[in-house]
Length: 339
Image (cartoon, rainbow, N blue to C red; front, side, top):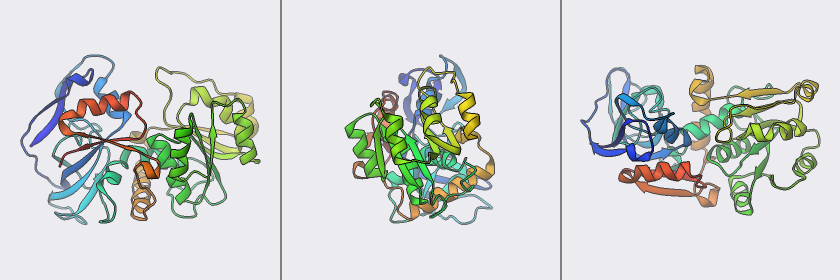
């Protein structure tokens, strides 16, 4: 089978296309024929590493993907060959990501995809939607698992509403009944955030960002989904309501520290939540997978420019270019076609 892999960390030129033996599903495992592989920032960052390092064995990149089950191992229930599925965390602490024709995964990392939900959606879930779900449920005001109505009456601020996680956060928050404010840096990105479903959009380049958000949320924001906490900590503190949560899942390149306004945070009883989807508790991860699957089945997580997340496609042999596109900050979602 065709697969892209790398044997040492480094720039995208370490990625090579080659042939690998077909894997087979063992006990409790499912083999998926990948149709579309999704690329996230975590994929190129893991591949690049902190410098050139030889790996003990070749690594196939990319955590997310969608395709069709073509083999199930002993002890697997609920899935059969021919079922359409999406997968998550495929390459986390494993050598086999989704940039290959066939991938074998534990049963719980393979999730049914309804017939009316496309593979592009399935390959765009994983890291972005599971991250967004955890950010939205890290508040005292939110449940462990989102569903329609569970965020009713709450106001959510999504920083960077045109990014993949921001896009998923907008869609999930709207699906769960929240009022959503998104911040963006351009008119074009504002249109994408609106297409995703944001009720209000604020350009954070304007000097009156806090006032604009305050006018939209007079009692303060309940949950902030934050992409650049080092730049926005002061703003987030100002616009947050009492007992609000600021959930940070990323930061600007090169940022290693953040200064949090302590006294204002104490006065409002703010919660600063830092998160990485790979290491959330098993209960929170399972809840996220269930909720994201339900939202996708309900048609709440569409992708494409008309839904606020433009798609850029590459063939498998151009995986390096796909990684570079994400690294260089392309707007929207990068997908790799394997069929």
